[in-house]
Image (cartoon, rainbow, N blue to C red; front, side):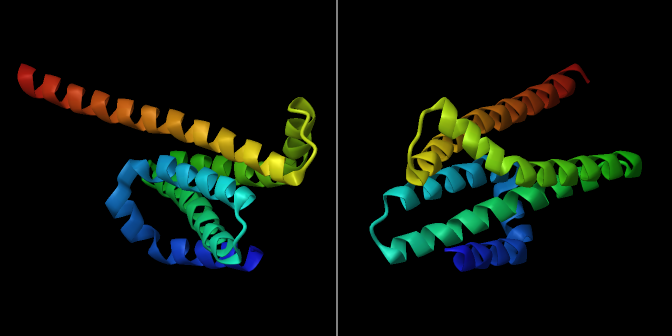
Length: 155
């Protein structure tokens, strides 16, 4: 599974530019949706082939999020780009460091007794985050379009 997560991440890194051009700001919500869905399917999978495909999708989707965030900050003025990139890298490393504690916390809060139920719970949390982020991106897009039309109407 770990090898195929790496393979999916490699493909995402290789194709990020094309994926970004196609999906734009929807890349993060869609990546989180794919990540959560694949994690959930992995927990119920009885097939090595399905688990392999889900592992590749997990690697691909996770690897699409970090470059998007770095790209977003790189588009800002130099001072802001450095600060934003630093924040993203620190948050990434904190997340990696704190993930075992998150697993323990979720296990205790939800009184889970198996790793499968922990992964399923995290998948459901990711699906919820995906729904919220789709809403945020759509709202931001509509607001930008509204402001653009409003400016054109007053000119």
